[in-house]
Amino acid sequence: MSSAAVAAEPSIADRVRAEVQRTLQRSIKGLNYFLSDDPAIGLTPKDTIYQRGTLKLNHYRPLAKEVYRIPVLFVMSLVSKSYILDLAPGQSFIEFLLKQGYDVYLIDWGVPRPEDSRLRLDDYILDFIPDCISRIMTDSGESDLSIIGYCMGGMLALIYAALFPQGPLKNLVCLTTPVNFEGMKLMRQWTDKRYFDLDRIVDTLGNVPPELIFASFDMLRPAARIASQIRLWDNMWNDDFVKSYRMFDRWAADQIPFPGECFRQTTKELMWDNKLIKNELVLGGRPVDLKQVVASFLAVMAEHDHIVPYESAKELLTLIGSTDKRDIVLKGGHVSLVAGPNAVRRLWPELDRWLSERSI
Amino acid sequence: MADQRNSPSDPIASWREWMTQSESRLNALFNELMSTDGYGRLMGGLTKVFVSMQKSMTEGMERYFTTLSLPTRSDVVDLGERLSLIESRLLAIESSLARLAGTAAHEGEIKAAVSRPPRTKKPAAGNGAAS
Image 1: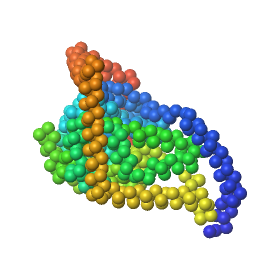
Image 2: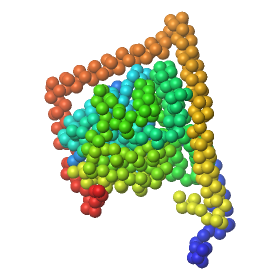
Image 3: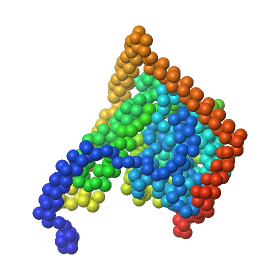
């Protein structure tokens, strides 16, 4: 160690003083933590331009003086709430895109009602998404569109792209999108058809309860919950850390039910039979051939993704028919890829660089 | 975080490092355990028990409410279903009326003219990420 580095390092007395101060602050702020409300989220101004059942098509109000010609549509996963894409100002992916000059729309699936348990992938991909897209085309007056799909939303968008290659989809971005379900080893093990009575679950419960979804995600990293609580206590003096922790923790625990029939179909046809990668999936009588995807394509994977492991997403690029295609593996996990300080530094500027050139 | 950088002479930083490593080790250990055939069988069995209990409880409650002449969960679900059907029909009528009156297009034009920025933006020079 150089003498300059030794001089820059605080003395033991300084460290003890800092640690005592932090301990005091932890106690004071720890009390505030339990007494205060969760931070406000999803504040970016928007208008709901279309509603159908629990589905809402939101249009975010532009934040730039001029916008790119091609509007952008976010397609969210069916089991997570969409506000992960619009956390607090300065930490919102949507706000970032608006400030960069994109015209942003989002499909918010809402919380499925008991009667939605009969919805299948066919309904989402052949009906809801095309319906929303035609509304966006009318609303924006444009003939082209970019889609950004996150997690299972990426899979819905990918299948849509394969079934509607004639447009209006011009650019497709899939963030942490599973395509090879053999790569989701733990999930496959837990839903092993020899022991997992799928039909009984769906027939009895209808929609799969959010507690079950939350527990299965949590079990993928069983030690993470305790470790994150300890980290929270360690950083209780740091307001930014606590605010960020509360937003992420709230989102992680705020899962929504999985529509029953869709769960049955996803488990049987994708998790068990891995039909998507084999081009054997059929929706509404139409075979899904990923080679039919011709839109400009960007796949982004996270190096430490425990929900959609790299192995389940890495082959995406080789399966599609697009000639303009690229994939990127970024540091981070499933959630930190799209939100939080890592996303601000890594994904957001990377995606903007790729999409801006293709949005004119 | 700058405060959390590791330093051999900082016991707090070493403790943080130890915690991160322990978390990874524990996760790996549990994941190994959970990927066994036995664990899958156990989880399957537990899920079956949970679902069976849920089913018999639901049936019991249904009988109980029916005896008391109170609406059961399935009655409320049926009602909800009928309401969403009415809701979707109302929406369809609303959009047909708007199309007939030509108001949707008109409103769209006004919105575009008044509050929406022009779609003329070009990427900043040096953005070149095309591959």
